[in-house]
Image (tube, rainbow, N blue to C red; front, top):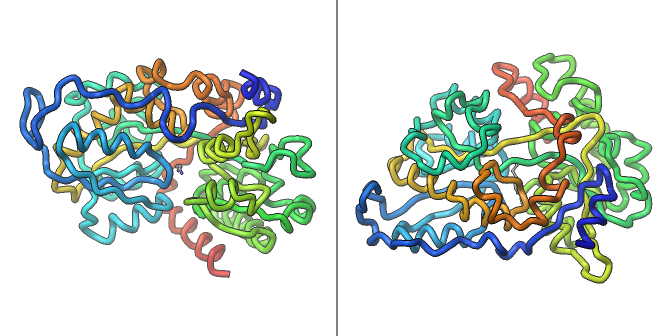
Length: 382
Ligand code: N2P
Protein backbone atom coordinates (compact mmCIF):
# COMPACT_ATOMS: atom_id res chain seq x y z
CA UNK A 1 0.00 0.00 0.00
CA UNK A 2 1.15 3.48 -0.81
CA UNK A 3 0.48 4.80 2.66
CA UNK A 4 2.39 1.96 4.25
CA UNK A 5 5.48 2.61 2.18
CA UNK A 6 5.37 6.25 3.25
CA UNK A 7 5.38 5.13 6.82
CA UNK A 8 8.13 2.58 6.34
CA UNK A 9 10.48 5.23 5.03
CA UNK A 10 10.32 7.08 8.31
CA UNK A 11 12.49 4.89 10.42
CA UNK A 12 11.51 6.36 13.75
CA UNK A 13 8.62 8.46 12.55
CA UNK A 14 6.25 5.65 13.08
CA UNK A 15 3.14 6.87 11.33
CA UNK A 16 0.07 4.81 11.73
CA UNK A 17 -2.61 3.86 9.34
CA UNK A 18 -5.17 1.22 8.73
CA UNK A 19 -8.88 0.68 8.74
CA UNK A 20 -11.13 3.59 9.56
CA UNK A 21 -11.96 4.42 13.14
CA UNK A 22 -15.54 3.41 12.48
CA UNK A 23 -14.96 -0.31 12.64
CA UNK A 24 -13.58 -2.33 9.75
CA UNK A 25 -12.57 -5.85 9.05
CA UNK A 26 -12.55 -6.81 12.70
CA UNK A 27 -16.24 -6.13 13.15
CA UNK A 28 -17.78 -8.24 15.86
CA UNK A 29 -19.40 -11.39 14.57
CA UNK A 30 -22.93 -12.33 15.36
CA UNK A 31 -23.19 -14.78 18.22
CA UNK A 32 -23.83 -18.35 17.21
CA UNK A 33 -26.54 -18.76 19.82
CA UNK A 34 -28.22 -15.91 21.61
CA UNK A 35 -28.75 -16.73 25.27
CA UNK A 36 -31.96 -15.56 26.83
CA UNK A 37 -31.93 -12.11 28.35
CA UNK A 38 -30.08 -12.22 31.63
CA UNK A 39 -30.70 -15.94 31.70
CA UNK A 40 -28.49 -18.83 32.58
CA UNK A 41 -27.15 -20.99 29.77
CA UNK A 42 -24.93 -24.02 29.89
CA UNK A 43 -21.57 -22.84 31.22
CA UNK A 44 -22.83 -19.27 31.61
CA UNK A 45 -23.28 -17.69 35.03
CA UNK A 46 -26.47 -15.95 35.98
CA UNK A 47 -25.74 -12.47 34.64
CA UNK A 48 -26.63 -9.19 36.31
CA UNK A 49 -28.93 -6.82 34.48
CA UNK A 50 -26.30 -4.06 34.48
CA UNK A 51 -22.52 -3.72 34.35
CA UNK A 52 -20.57 -0.54 35.03
CA UNK A 53 -17.46 -0.24 32.87
CA UNK A 54 -14.82 2.46 33.42
CA UNK A 55 -12.18 2.89 30.70
CA UNK A 56 -9.76 5.36 29.14
CA UNK A 57 -11.07 7.83 26.57
CA UNK A 58 -11.16 6.60 22.93
CA UNK A 59 -10.12 3.13 23.99
CA UNK A 60 -12.88 0.83 22.73
CA UNK A 61 -15.17 0.39 19.77
CA UNK A 62 -18.52 1.10 21.44
CA UNK A 63 -20.13 -1.38 19.05
CA UNK A 64 -18.37 -4.06 21.10
CA UNK A 65 -20.38 -2.88 24.12
CA UNK A 66 -23.63 -2.77 22.16
CA UNK A 67 -23.01 -6.32 20.88
CA UNK A 68 -22.45 -7.60 24.41
CA UNK A 69 -25.66 -5.93 25.57
CA UNK A 70 -27.60 -7.43 22.71
CA UNK A 71 -26.12 -10.87 23.06
CA UNK A 72 -26.45 -11.20 26.82
CA UNK A 73 -29.16 -8.74 27.81
CA UNK A 74 -26.83 -6.87 30.14
CA UNK A 75 -26.99 -3.07 30.04
CA UNK A 76 -23.53 -1.52 30.11
CA UNK A 77 -23.08 1.79 31.86
CA UNK A 78 -19.92 3.21 30.32
CA UNK A 79 -17.75 6.02 31.60
CA UNK A 80 -14.18 7.19 31.00
CA UNK A 81 -11.30 8.36 33.16
CA UNK A 82 -8.28 10.55 32.36
CA UNK A 83 -5.42 8.84 34.14
CA UNK A 84 -4.43 5.92 36.35
CA UNK A 85 -4.21 8.27 39.31
CA UNK A 86 -7.75 9.56 38.74
CA UNK A 87 -8.95 5.97 38.59
CA UNK A 88 -7.12 5.19 41.84
CA UNK A 89 -8.63 8.23 43.56
CA UNK A 90 -12.11 7.14 42.51
CA UNK A 91 -11.61 3.64 43.91
CA UNK A 92 -10.04 4.88 47.11
CA UNK A 93 -12.94 7.24 47.71
CA UNK A 94 -15.02 4.15 48.51
CA UNK A 95 -17.65 2.14 46.67
CA UNK A 96 -17.25 3.51 43.18
CA UNK A 97 -19.97 1.34 41.69
CA UNK A 98 -17.57 0.29 38.92
CA UNK A 99 -17.42 -3.38 37.96
CA UNK A 100 -14.74 -3.39 35.24
CA UNK A 101 -11.73 -1.06 35.11
CA UNK A 102 -8.67 -0.72 32.85
CA UNK A 103 -5.55 0.26 34.87
CA UNK A 104 -2.03 0.18 33.42
CA UNK A 105 0.73 -2.15 34.57
CA UNK A 106 2.25 -0.16 37.47
CA UNK A 107 -1.19 0.85 38.71
CA UNK A 108 -2.32 -2.77 38.83
CA UNK A 109 0.59 -3.44 41.21
CA UNK A 110 -0.38 -0.45 43.36
CA UNK A 111 -4.02 -1.50 43.45
CA UNK A 112 -3.18 -5.09 44.39
CA UNK A 113 -1.00 -3.78 47.21
CA UNK A 114 -3.86 -1.60 48.43
CA UNK A 115 -6.36 -4.47 48.28
CA UNK A 116 -8.52 -2.66 45.72
CA UNK A 117 -8.83 -5.50 43.18
CA UNK A 118 -10.94 -8.65 43.25
CA UNK A 119 -9.27 -11.97 42.46
CA UNK A 120 -10.31 -13.52 39.18
CA UNK A 121 -10.05 -17.07 37.87
CA UNK A 122 -8.47 -17.15 34.42
CA UNK A 123 -8.85 -20.93 34.30
CA UNK A 124 -12.59 -20.27 34.10
CA UNK A 125 -12.08 -17.91 31.13
CA UNK A 126 -11.60 -20.02 27.98
CA UNK A 127 -10.58 -16.99 25.92
CA UNK A 128 -7.57 -16.34 28.13
CA UNK A 129 -5.85 -18.95 25.93
CA UNK A 130 -5.99 -16.37 23.11
CA UNK A 131 -3.54 -14.08 24.90
CA UNK A 132 0.08 -14.33 23.74
CA UNK A 133 2.59 -15.83 26.17
CA UNK A 134 4.59 -12.59 26.10
CA UNK A 135 1.68 -10.79 27.78
CA UNK A 136 0.64 -13.40 30.34
CA UNK A 137 1.93 -13.67 33.88
CA UNK A 138 3.32 -10.08 33.97
CA UNK A 139 5.58 -8.95 36.81
CA UNK A 140 2.90 -6.56 38.08
CA UNK A 141 0.32 -9.34 38.39
CA UNK A 142 2.04 -12.75 38.69
CA UNK A 143 -0.17 -15.57 37.52
CA UNK A 144 -2.83 -13.11 36.29
CA UNK A 145 -4.56 -13.46 39.64
CA UNK A 146 -6.30 -10.11 39.21
CA UNK A 147 -6.33 -8.90 35.61
CA UNK A 148 -6.25 -9.90 31.95
CA UNK A 149 -4.24 -7.93 29.36
CA UNK A 150 -6.27 -5.51 27.24
CA UNK A 151 -4.10 -3.45 24.87
CA UNK A 152 -0.61 -2.03 24.89
CA UNK A 153 1.33 0.73 23.23
CA UNK A 154 4.16 3.24 23.25
CA UNK A 155 4.42 6.78 24.60
CA UNK A 156 6.36 9.15 22.35
CA UNK A 157 5.93 12.29 20.32
CA UNK A 158 3.14 12.98 17.85
CA UNK A 159 3.94 15.74 15.36
CA UNK A 160 2.31 17.48 12.47
CA UNK A 161 3.79 16.22 9.22
CA UNK A 162 5.18 18.88 6.93
CA UNK A 163 5.43 21.57 9.60
CA UNK A 164 8.69 23.54 9.24
CA UNK A 165 11.31 21.99 11.48
CA UNK A 166 10.02 18.45 11.11
CA UNK A 167 12.04 17.57 8.03
CA UNK A 168 13.44 14.97 10.39
CA UNK A 169 11.25 13.15 12.88
CA UNK A 170 11.43 14.81 16.33
CA UNK A 171 12.67 11.60 17.90
CA UNK A 172 13.97 13.16 21.12
CA UNK A 173 12.50 14.37 24.39
CA UNK A 174 14.46 17.56 23.67
CA UNK A 175 11.36 18.62 21.74
CA UNK A 176 9.54 18.85 25.06
CA UNK A 177 12.35 20.16 27.25
CA UNK A 178 15.18 21.92 25.37
CA UNK A 179 14.57 25.71 25.29
CA UNK A 180 16.14 25.96 21.84
CA UNK A 181 13.56 23.55 20.42
CA UNK A 182 10.74 24.96 22.53
CA UNK A 183 11.35 28.48 21.28
CA UNK A 184 11.11 27.15 17.75
CA UNK A 185 7.79 25.33 18.22
CA UNK A 186 5.97 26.75 21.19
CA UNK A 187 4.31 29.66 19.39
CA UNK A 188 2.49 27.05 17.30
CA UNK A 189 1.54 24.87 20.18
CA UNK A 190 2.82 21.95 22.20
CA UNK A 191 0.65 19.63 24.28
CA UNK A 192 1.87 17.28 27.00
CA UNK A 193 0.02 14.35 28.51
CA UNK A 194 -1.78 15.32 31.69
CA UNK A 195 -0.41 12.18 33.28
CA UNK A 196 2.00 12.28 36.18
CA UNK A 197 4.02 9.09 35.66
CA UNK A 198 4.19 9.63 31.89
CA UNK A 199 5.33 13.26 32.01
CA UNK A 200 7.82 12.67 34.81
CA UNK A 201 9.11 9.61 32.89
CA UNK A 202 9.68 11.75 29.78
CA UNK A 203 11.77 14.18 31.84
CA UNK A 204 13.66 11.32 33.52
CA UNK A 205 14.50 9.75 30.15
CA UNK A 206 15.76 13.11 28.90
CA UNK A 207 17.94 13.49 32.00
CA UNK A 208 19.32 9.96 31.57
CA UNK A 209 17.61 8.59 34.68
CA UNK A 210 15.37 5.57 35.11
CA UNK A 211 11.65 6.26 34.53
CA UNK A 212 11.12 4.29 37.75
CA UNK A 213 13.62 6.12 39.93
CA UNK A 214 12.89 6.42 43.62
CA UNK A 215 15.70 8.92 44.15
CA UNK A 216 14.36 12.22 45.46
CA UNK A 217 17.17 14.30 43.94
CA UNK A 218 16.52 12.86 40.47
CA UNK A 219 12.80 13.45 40.82
CA UNK A 220 13.38 17.04 41.88
CA UNK A 221 15.66 17.48 38.89
CA UNK A 222 12.84 16.19 36.68
CA UNK A 223 10.40 18.57 38.42
CA UNK A 224 12.67 21.55 37.77
CA UNK A 225 13.14 20.58 34.14
CA UNK A 226 9.37 20.32 33.66
CA UNK A 227 8.77 23.65 35.41
CA UNK A 228 11.33 25.34 33.17
CA UNK A 229 9.62 23.97 30.03
CA UNK A 230 6.05 24.47 31.20
CA UNK A 231 5.72 28.11 30.10
CA UNK A 232 6.33 26.97 26.53
CA UNK A 233 3.55 24.36 26.58
CA UNK A 234 0.08 25.25 25.46
CA UNK A 235 -1.92 22.47 27.12
CA UNK A 236 -1.84 19.47 29.46
CA UNK A 237 -4.29 17.07 27.85
CA UNK A 238 -4.33 13.28 27.73
CA UNK A 239 -8.04 12.75 27.12
CA UNK A 240 -9.30 14.34 23.92
CA UNK A 241 -6.06 15.82 22.58
CA UNK A 242 -6.21 13.71 19.43
CA UNK A 243 -9.55 15.17 18.37
CA UNK A 244 -9.49 18.67 19.88
CA UNK A 245 -5.81 19.56 19.44
CA UNK A 246 -4.20 17.31 16.83
CA UNK A 247 -6.86 16.82 14.19
CA UNK A 248 -8.02 20.42 14.54
CA UNK A 249 -4.41 21.64 14.09
CA UNK A 250 -4.41 23.61 17.35
CA UNK A 251 -0.89 22.33 18.02
CA UNK A 252 2.09 21.06 16.06
CA UNK A 253 3.57 18.63 18.56
CA UNK A 254 2.30 16.47 21.40
CA UNK A 255 3.63 14.13 24.01
CA UNK A 256 1.38 11.30 22.92
CA UNK A 257 0.27 7.70 23.04
CA UNK A 258 0.89 5.81 19.81
CA UNK A 259 -2.72 4.80 19.16
CA UNK A 260 -4.07 8.30 19.69
CA UNK A 261 -1.55 9.63 17.18
CA UNK A 262 -2.54 6.84 14.79
CA UNK A 263 -6.17 7.91 15.14
CA UNK A 264 -5.12 11.48 14.27
CA UNK A 265 -3.12 10.16 11.30
CA UNK A 266 -6.04 8.24 9.92
CA UNK A 267 -8.63 10.93 10.60
CA UNK A 268 -6.54 13.37 8.56
CA UNK A 269 -5.50 10.83 5.94
CA UNK A 270 -5.49 12.26 2.43
CA UNK A 271 -5.85 9.62 -0.28
CA UNK A 272 -4.15 11.82 -2.88
CA UNK A 273 -1.21 12.82 -0.71
CA UNK A 274 -0.96 9.25 0.55
CA UNK A 275 -0.43 10.32 4.14
CA UNK A 276 -2.09 11.82 7.18
CA UNK A 277 -1.13 15.00 9.02
CA UNK A 278 0.08 13.34 12.22
CA UNK A 279 3.08 11.07 12.64
CA UNK A 280 4.65 9.42 15.66
CA UNK A 281 8.28 9.38 16.78
CA UNK A 282 9.86 7.26 19.49
CA UNK A 283 12.54 9.28 21.34
CA UNK A 284 16.06 7.95 21.12
CA UNK A 285 16.59 8.46 24.87
CA UNK A 286 14.05 5.71 25.55
CA UNK A 287 10.30 5.62 25.96
CA UNK A 288 7.51 3.97 27.91
CA UNK A 289 5.81 0.81 26.79
CA UNK A 290 2.59 0.28 28.68
CA UNK A 291 0.22 -2.62 29.04
CA UNK A 292 -3.32 -1.81 30.06
CA UNK A 293 -5.49 -4.40 31.74
CA UNK A 294 -9.04 -5.45 32.50
CA UNK A 295 -9.65 -5.85 36.24
CA UNK A 296 -12.49 -5.95 38.74
CA UNK A 297 -12.59 -3.63 41.76
CA UNK A 298 -12.87 -5.50 45.06
CA UNK A 299 -15.96 -3.38 45.75
CA UNK A 300 -17.84 -4.69 42.69
CA UNK A 301 -21.12 -6.40 43.51
CA UNK A 302 -21.27 -8.05 40.06
CA UNK A 303 -18.02 -9.98 39.86
CA UNK A 304 -19.36 -13.01 37.95
CA UNK A 305 -20.82 -10.77 35.24
CA UNK A 306 -17.60 -8.74 35.19
CA UNK A 307 -15.57 -11.94 34.62
CA UNK A 308 -17.98 -12.98 31.91
CA UNK A 309 -17.43 -9.61 30.19
CA UNK A 310 -13.64 -9.96 30.58
CA UNK A 311 -13.83 -13.31 28.82
CA UNK A 312 -15.93 -11.73 26.05
CA UNK A 313 -13.29 -8.99 25.51
CA UNK A 314 -10.76 -11.74 24.76
CA UNK A 315 -12.83 -13.30 21.96
CA UNK A 316 -10.65 -13.00 18.84
CA UNK A 317 -13.22 -11.02 16.82
CA UNK A 318 -13.96 -8.71 19.73
CA UNK A 319 -10.29 -8.00 20.50
CA UNK A 320 -9.69 -7.40 16.79
CA UNK A 321 -12.64 -4.99 16.53
CA UNK A 322 -11.17 -3.00 19.42
CA UNK A 323 -7.73 -2.76 17.79
CA UNK A 324 -9.24 -1.95 14.38
CA UNK A 325 -10.99 0.98 16.05
CA UNK A 326 -8.39 2.25 18.52
CA UNK A 327 -5.16 1.46 16.59
CA UNK A 328 -3.54 0.11 19.75
CA UNK A 329 -1.84 -3.29 19.51
CA UNK A 330 -3.66 -6.26 20.96
CA UNK A 331 -2.02 -8.89 23.16
CA UNK A 332 -4.58 -11.33 21.71
CA UNK A 333 -2.74 -13.50 19.17
CA UNK A 334 -5.90 -15.29 18.06
CA UNK A 335 -7.29 -11.86 17.10
CA UNK A 336 -4.53 -11.22 14.58
CA UNK A 337 -6.30 -12.90 11.67
CA UNK A 338 -9.18 -10.43 12.13
CA UNK A 339 -7.00 -7.33 12.52
CA UNK A 340 -6.65 -5.12 9.46
CA UNK A 341 -3.27 -6.14 7.92
CA UNK A 342 -2.38 -2.47 7.53
CA UNK A 343 -2.57 -2.13 11.30
CA UNK A 344 -0.86 -5.42 12.05
CA UNK A 345 2.03 -4.69 9.70
CA UNK A 346 2.38 -1.07 10.68
CA UNK A 347 5.57 -0.39 12.68
CA UNK A 348 3.93 2.70 14.18
CA UNK A 349 1.37 0.48 15.86
CA UNK A 350 3.19 -2.83 16.32
CA UNK A 351 6.75 -1.57 16.92
CA UNK A 352 9.55 -3.65 15.44
CA UNK A 353 12.11 -5.36 17.73
CA UNK A 354 14.70 -2.58 17.44
CA UNK A 355 12.15 -0.06 18.75
CA UNK A 356 10.78 -2.42 21.42
CA UNK A 357 14.31 -2.79 22.77
CA UNK A 358 14.35 0.87 23.75
CA UNK A 359 11.08 0.70 25.61
CA UNK A 360 10.63 0.38 29.36
CA UNK A 361 7.63 -0.37 31.51
CA UNK A 362 6.59 1.91 34.31
CA UNK A 363 6.76 0.04 37.61
CA UNK A 364 5.22 0.46 41.01
CA UNK A 365 7.69 2.72 42.84
CA UNK A 366 6.44 1.80 46.32
CA UNK A 367 6.60 4.57 48.91
CA UNK A 368 8.32 6.87 46.42
CA UNK A 369 4.84 7.39 44.99
CA UNK A 370 4.56 10.16 47.59
CA UNK A 371 7.55 11.94 46.04
CA UNK A 372 5.93 11.59 42.60
CA UNK A 373 2.70 13.04 44.01
CA UNK A 374 4.60 15.93 45.56
CA UNK A 375 6.48 16.62 42.32
CA UNK A 376 3.23 16.48 40.33
CA UNK A 377 1.51 18.90 42.69
CA UNK A 378 4.40 21.33 42.26
CA UNK A 379 4.18 20.94 38.48
CA UNK A 380 0.44 21.48 38.25
CA UNK A 381 0.25 24.08 40.98
CA UNK A 382 2.62 26.68 39.64
C1 N2P B 1 -6.26 5.99 24.88
C2 N2P B 1 -5.60 5.90 26.20
C3 N2P B 1 -4.42 5.03 26.19
C4 N2P B 1 -4.08 4.55 27.53
N1 N2P B 1 -6.85 7.26 24.63
C5 N2P B 1 -2.65 4.63 27.85
N2 N2P B 1 -2.33 3.88 28.97
